[in-house]
Structure formats: C-alpha cells, structure tokens
Image (cartoon, rainbow, N blue to C red; front, side):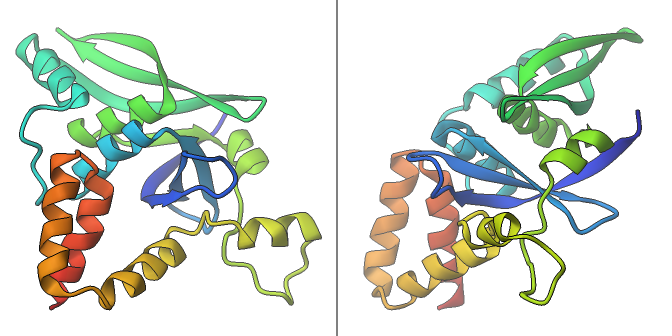
Length: 203
C-alpha cells in the first residue's frame, strides 16, 4: 500500500465533540486534510511543541519520554497512521536502537506529539486518506454533496478558528492580555497561551 506524507496544519476546538480538539493534518502533495479528534491534554502537548517560544516550567510527559529514549540511544524514525476503525485512528511508532528497528503501537495523538519532538515524519496510507480525508475549503460551485458541504461548516478549519479567537482578543487591553498569558501558562493551557502571545506581539 502506498504511503502519503502528512504535515501538521494546526489544532482547532471541535464543535462536533464536547471538550475535544481537532488535529488537522495536511496532505503534503495534495489539498486534502485529515482531521483527527484528540483530547485537551494531547492537544496541549502538540501545541507547545509547535510553539517553540513557550516553555513549560516542568517537563511534560512526552518531553520526559524523549529524554528517556535519548538517554538509551533510541530514536523515532517515523510515525504511520495505519488503521481506521469506527472513526478511531491507530498508529505505529517506528523506533530504532543499535540499528535494530522496533514497531510500537500508540494512540495517534501520542505518536504525533512524539514525532514532533524527534523531528520524525508522519505518514498514512492512501486508502485511509481516501476514506477520511476532507476538503475543508469547498466552493459552493464544487461538484460535491450536502454531507461534504456540512463538513466545511464544522469548526475543523483551524484558520477560521484562530481568526475568530484573534478577533476577540483584539479588543482586550494589553494589561489583561499579559495577565491572561500568565494564567494560561500556569494552567498549562499552552494552545491558548500561544494565541494570546501572538496578539501581544502584534501590539
């Protein structure tokens, strides 16, 4: 089966599932997006690694795993999202130690958080992308069905999500933004902290 490389486009709050986030993966040589619903903690773990300027006061779980693995000369070569069952994605982490390769089963959110920390590429199989990939920027004139148009209007487009949040923060006084940033970092809400930091930088 043919592998397709994916990049992380971003993270958005999911309106389809309460308290969950949508991790948006982008097809490298194509226009399809692969939205994967993940938990708040996993979203924070991914967001903080994407935002290099935000440093947690203590190592997060995935950072600890990286330090542990490197101490014993284990590297992550790649992550493969290899199966989709009833809307749940299954992933494998391809590791190497002393020139010996091992395959470890993992939740997709954890696998991607680790791939980011090791600089490892993320792949999925073509049939999974054909089944679960969506075009999030559809035009009404596109030859598509009502179900796909409904997907367009879900809050899975991270650009729209970030734009809406930034607009709300734009009317917040600078002093309040700094207090909000400090509170977000203290609460380890690093995704929100990154958005607030961007707004402060604009000022």
